[in-house]
Length: 234
Ligand code: DC
Image: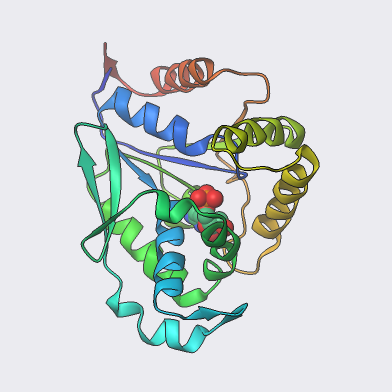
């Protein structure tokens, strides 16, 4: 499908809702760029760990802020994998930013105002020419309040936990359903209660509750919303 007008699509929502998967599939359909902003905060967290700015549970915020200018994040599309891959200081990051330790610290690192400021600036730059699907927590509210289409994704925490448990078990990680559910509930609380840019639905966002929807159904739903609102060619 080809849109006859260039737009920005913001996808926000709770963790483990499948935001990145939907954003990636949608970008593929529209031949747009997909930017996973969670991966950017994860990359900064990875860099903090590599540089020992996180040690023994302490986060050295002053040192992080002082050296933020050393961080260079770029996305490059890999035609083979069809993924928009993240490069940090010329190094490709894939599984390194999905480890439990990076996940555990990412919510704290993403709360540092200077880190957010830098990421938001970069994200705005990436959307300068539109034709982008960006997913995260504050895309429709802070990064692109003027986005032409905003989606807010949610799903029953029990269903999210079930999906996440299956993913973790597939990777051979030994956890219980209750542990996964507790982690999801904690992350929801942190995301919605933090001081800067908390997760909230933009007033003009469309809500997608995908509790009982397959990936294909979600993509069909969003394409239907797009076709209703923007001129296109099949
Ligand atoms: O979506 P994710 O789990 O990969 O996100 C990693 C962390 O970054 C998570 O703690 C939420 C945070 N985040 C954020 O604060 N703002 C965004 N736009 C995207 C993610």
